[in-house]
Length: 345
Image (cartoon, rainbow, N blue to C red; front, side):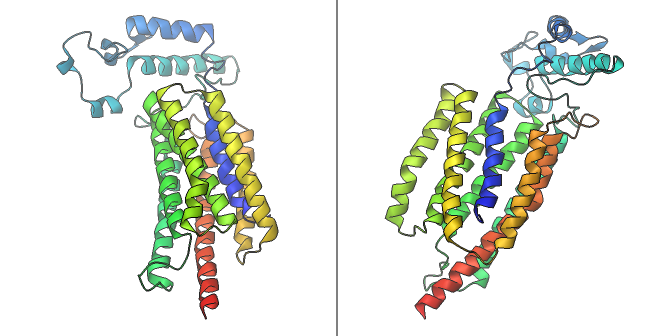
């Protein structure tokens, strides 16, 4: 039960991302007082004494006060929230103040806890931790690159002896991409960022499944790798296109993520049962940390002071786990390279 450890935690992370979209309706946005506040705000552009200039634009982006060229450019629109978002946000804050005055706990609105914005960021703590995870993956991938090309022996054509080099490079790029869009999604939850976040998560989970098969069965022949990866890549690509161009079906996406995650776990379980690795203790470190992190997602609680919730803390726990995981990958490169050199001799 060794290498399954890290990929179990990675799989759980991605499955959680796939499940988040199911929460597209919550008790908060069904509250009559909240709905009445949002409706009044969309008609008047005001919540109490607070009025929003961006309510001068209709929901489809066309100006109500002038021609199209009078609108602000996209990069300025990104910094500001549209009329609906501002109405929902301030109505949510007012409703939560009313509930707190009556000793009632916070509710979720549109699938999210009532977060407070900071410098225009919707979930600033999750954004910060996502960015740190991105930085840790970049550091891990860069140190892996330096190890292979500058510290370990190379072939005569200056390529690494480690026969899974290219696969881990792809894994690193997909990981950095997923955490980048996670940071963007948490900073601004709109249709585009949601699709990019989900697509990146599915791509990472799908490639992790391919990686588990190739590494656990030690498939080194390029033709065999293509035969294994091609149908999975075709399915993953089709699924992402379906989500983006046909329907963002959260239930179907959940099933796909669970199936890919379970299959991946089974593959790693078989490999872990028949192999022993010199850096097993790093994997056990990850499994303990991943197990503790799992409780943060199960025990979901409202954000403290409107900023730090369970999901944000989960983002924090993955930072050191990422460091340990890339350390294991480097150790695996050393171990495999040493083994190959001994076989040659």
